[in-house]
Amino acid sequence: MAIYLDHAATTPMHPAAIDAYSRQMAEVGNASSLHAQGRAVRKSVEESRELIARAAGCDASEIIFTSSGTEANNLAIKGLFWADPSKKTIVLSSIEHHAIVDPVEWLVSHEGAKAIFAPVSSEGILDLVSLAKIVEENREDIALISVMHSNNEVGTLQPIVEVVKIAAGIPVHTDAVQSFGKVVFDYKALGVTSATISAHKLGGPLGVAALILKRGMDITPLLHGGGQERDIRSSTVNAPGIISFATAVDQALMNMNENSHRMNELRSKLRSAISTSVPDARVNGSFDASLPTIVNVTFPGTKNEGLLVLLDMAGISASQGSACSAGVQRPSHVLLAMGLSESEADSTVRFSLGFTSTEEDISALRSVIADVVKKAKI
Figure (spheres, rainbow, N blue to C red):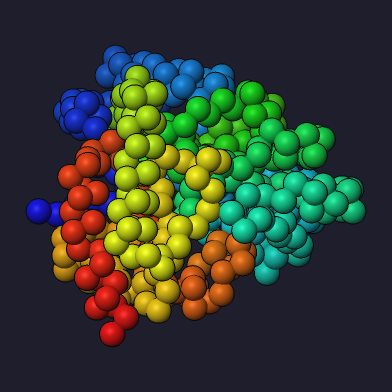
């Protein structure tokens, strides 16, 4: 029996989201068309936009649908940077997802941007004192600040409200792909300029996400065409994906308290299963200021690639961290920023839970992990 412990990469679609997707796929109509079929699709899309907006604590008009979290992050980073040519500095945490880091590095290489990486603690939490100093020294030239809502590798939640206070008017973007639908997320309460959320991390389909962007904010589009999505993201809207996204959001929020409590219990059992079976294993990140779904573990004397192969042979799916690096084997920049050595980073595996996870999954891992690690050390 396959045990899936890689929900942070993608989680199974919720049955209700599958039903919503299938029903809409059977319909015809372009949401931009004026005829009856087009209007019907538009109505469903706008109802979905309103549902997601309520869940995210924003206005429906602030939701801009995209094809992925990566696209939404690129739109935010590049669009906000290009909006003010007089400012060239981008400040970001040292543990951002590659969907943030890579567009920033592209802007550095091609557009004359300057990137400043703010450090984090050994638990992976942003150092606010250092951030404040960076902002104070560079304020007049900072185009934007980007700090993720929660980290995708170790699960740490970041102090976004404090970041916005330090920014004091500088645009702030937060990547909330990993946390939206799992913990409370309130766009207005956070005070950020923009935020990225995605469907497939919470039980929706692949291929649909959204950028939440403050109304009236000046941003340069990546795509030009039909003028959809406030003329910020031109393209025929993915109606089946959007409607399924909204259904998954509805399901996630309906069961958030119950799921969060259950995930916390499972996470504690997962950590215990690993620590009792492999005494020298070390869990990375914070337990309290963290998502209830991620356990990041270093197994000294192993290589994560070998560990993952052995786990897979034992019927257990896990990952080395981000699933968005196209199979490129390199030490995690997140773990290095937290103070781990390259050897330690290369010995680290991420286990992540989701709404389909059970105690039987933890028991299955407990039954094999000691043998897997022993073999990986040979």
